[in-house]
Image (cartoon, rainbow, N blue to C red; front, side, top):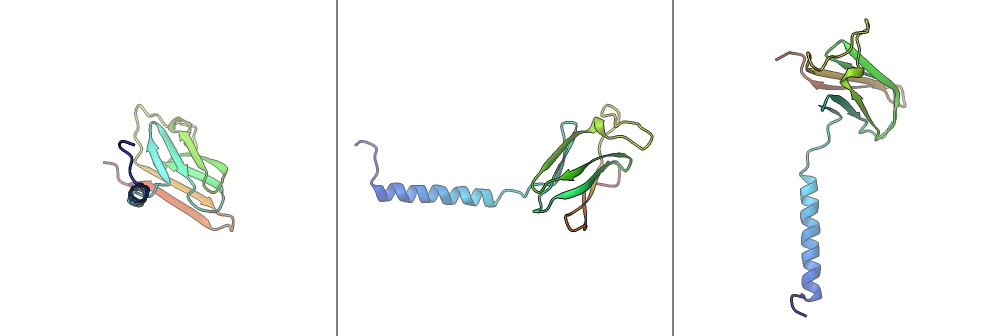
Length: 122
């Protein structure tokens, strides 16, 4: 057959390709638990325990949340769904996100805290 390789050469090539794929995946950045993009906040529970009483606060004032986020689960919420205690909703046209804080409790009642961004407006 034209273009065919002996079996050992194909096997070696397959091993090299598999090792290259493994090395490439090992160099990937770890996933971020909080992502702000496309007018939404995404929170991912990267732990092996469910979270309860999940509260998300954007820019110190705009809050939202869910009662539960399963282990490995992901929450995606549009910024327009976050509101202050007085009912003012986040306005993407006039505001930008500079900080996101997430608090929750794990299955043992231990506090979980995540932060994205900076306290200082730039």
